[in-house]
Image (cartoon, rainbow, N blue to C red; front, side, top):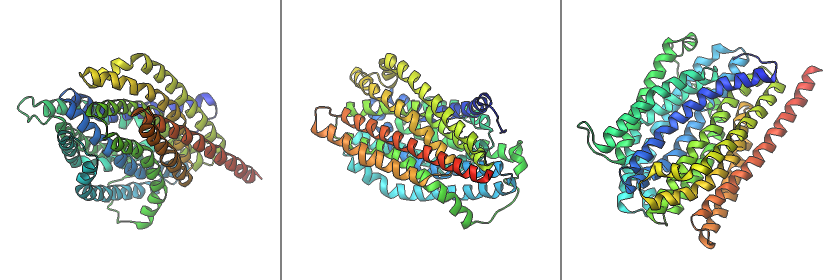
Length: 455
């Protein structure tokens, strides 16, 4: 990355970093998209099972990987502050921590998964599909967490095209193995939706191995010598990663787990309603990759500017990012409104599922508008390393405001299942307002600090 002096230069540098991140995120999420979509074409039970499995896995993965996202602002600020000699140890300690986290998740999952699925009171076929999918996916958990550290390192250097190419190479492999293992082609076992879990696990191993090779052998990454020295475990470095990462991870967890909670409550509805809800939620999450990518790009550029104590530039980057996100959300919302039935047909051949999914997708449009503000603001705050207040605001907005309101509408009014979606929209909007207020306050503090430095 380079220092920028005009708004045009900032927009150009932000887009240079953002576009590869967006392509990467869309490709990564496409794995879940194709898992759900291809399973839906196998059977409605497989669609419901894989969608529920994905909705349970997503908050766990995004929450814990959010902890590892702290590597991005840490490395970005080290580079901005010209302390590159400290980068290798930070990355290796992140890898150690990633391995420990993956092992803990595997052990916890082996005890907790069945009780959680039992509490949902699913139809037996859907229960078995969800369990089988998550069990298969667990084989790729360790490499996935390691990959997130390596990706955070590469992205922090502004080389987001590299992770884009890695993911684009892996996506066709995931689709091919989905086809082979879901439908039992070319002598492979016919596993239905469970096969998509194995396909995704194979893909996770592939992208991690590719990332390790690139970091070790290709410039500019190899110049850091990440794997040239065996570092001992540093609890102080773990503490630094966790102090920044845990609030990030929990904030992301509170945001994503609310969708899993809604899925839990939705289990009281019919299989058709569950399938339609999950299909619509899957596509809404797919669109969420746009503001999420902008959020990740803002963390990189703002972290770089804050490391160099260029507070005015950091502020300008944040508002450029939010503006881009809002414009993209409006565009996506208009397109989705006019193509919602066609989008619903991607997930199922069942006309009842298609019609209900199309109705849910109308509410998804309003998701995009709130996310277009909340996600980039969170990314900007991470660049400032301001993460604790974000955690509190996210918890209150989603769990104290959004979910209770949605539960009331779904169970005590005529809105039914749509009530949960209205509650989610209210929670997202509240989060966007609170987080924006926090960002403005942080920026004002930095202006005062910069004036003191000038004196």
